[in-house]
Length: 141
Image (cartoon, rainbow, N blue to C red; front, side, top):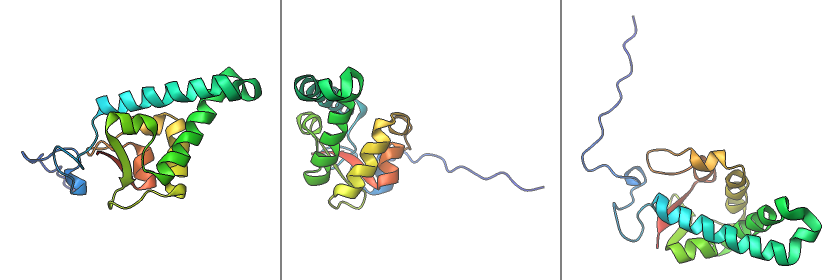
């Protein structure tokens, strides 16, 4: 009879991001859920205002904000590493190896983020499936 696989016991100094070599707190540590939600709300509000002013007549009230939100994320995360909401919440998106995100990773990450489910399913390092697929992580600035 095969033996059951043993799950390693959590280490007392284990923290989100430890598996990625990130510090427990301060700059470069995993951005917490509170900061992420604040950043998301800010980004959605900005996207809604822009959509109301410029896009809703074309795409409608339902798709306008989502389209602007997605475009903001692809362009801003792909070029600067953060959106307006990320910046105001003190967060930045970077590759898991610490490098620049770039447009292709930002596009993949954003497409999965807009599906919602990949963003709310996370691993012990608090990376959503959208971040794992894109090889990115959200950290504090």
